[in-house]
Length: 193
Image (cartoon, rainbow, N blue to C red; front, side, top):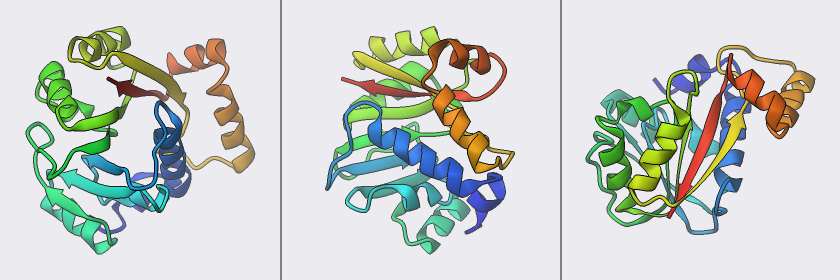
């Protein structure tokens, strides 16, 4: 299980590094000493790409994944993301490739708001979810500000660096990004109070 991320992503390094960069920069920036809670953390490989001064805590429903996270040297606990409460408030909560594990979206967003100080960051597939409905649920549960950013990082295909760099540029070109999002990729959503 310790190499789960390396098997799950065609280019784990590129995908996870880009995710860490977006989580760090979208909405309020992460600062030294901030605690990041990573819900549905898998093997916690994401933590390898966060700034060193950010503290990390992973949560996963699979004991095998938690064991893999611990094997990688990251703090992690086995728990259900729907009712887990961290031992202290966190600056940032993330939930990637897993928002569908929430039993119900609004109660989940309310629960996370109870222990998150700066922001909740997660990915949302616009072909699977009504993005405006997700934003409405966030606002109804106390997350007053929402930032969306296209996230063009393939999971199943390793791309040459020049093509990957081109995709990163397209993330910032709104009309082209919206067209591409009709067929592929996701948004990263940062919700703030």
